[in-house]
Length: 346
Image (cartoon, rainbow, N blue to C red; front, side, top):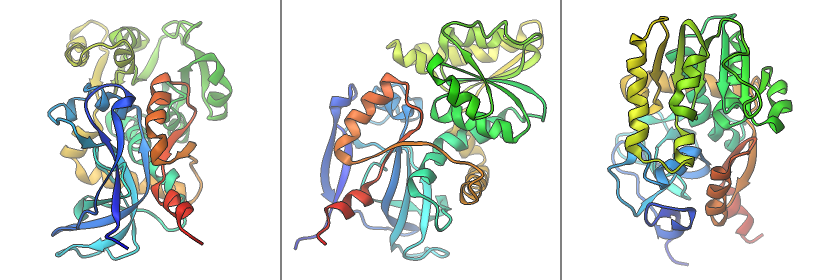
């Protein structure tokens, strides 16, 4: 038996899902201040699509080949020098942006959030990017107040579902815009569905919405801004419409820049762009605090993130195609550990 190897989802060059490949590499070794984890679950996000197509500002300076993988739940199997407070077998989570669609990886101990015993690893992974984004949009960026009227675009998507669920828990009146076929899901999550292909969301609520959350950016966020009441707030956090339309990064950065100019328009409306990475860089304690809170809600079953499918390494490229096509009602999660167990003899 030779040295065990790592499996890694690698992007060969920017472009289509065909540029993704699964390669073998030597196992990483935990350095000082680091742990190595055996990966139990790593989410696949629409953000991975923007990274793969070279449309994500935070990774725009990186050049392929590199490993994909925005977040990770893993079990510590090696502890580096100078690490205290963690031991072998502990389950931990981190948001890595790159490099977690792997069988093993190293993580800085100072970045880790503990995962409660007994929770499902794939459900826990679904919370790291999507649900933390939703929680911070509501409570850190918009600072919502009970009774406010809120519109969520892309309400059937991963962040959208989290916004509906956490918004209802915060006592908000929530509307969810999505394709017509997702209306039952949106009602189930406690929101009023809006079929964005057939209904004009800018006219549905007399006086307008207190807050609009928009991760799509259709029409450069203009209609979302129009849907606000006087003094309302638009929280933009993505631009999937621009990605679908094959626009360049400069165009989408111009959309974001324009948001900050709109505050000078009459009506007292405000707009801002939320980035989970920018907020984590400014307030690292908030990220751990908010993710810990979400894990507690998961452990008590107060929230139930939807996992559409647990996938293997060989299904990652197809998963990217499904993400780009849209219409998923839950998270796709790579589960290397269960794949490894399935292939183990006995």
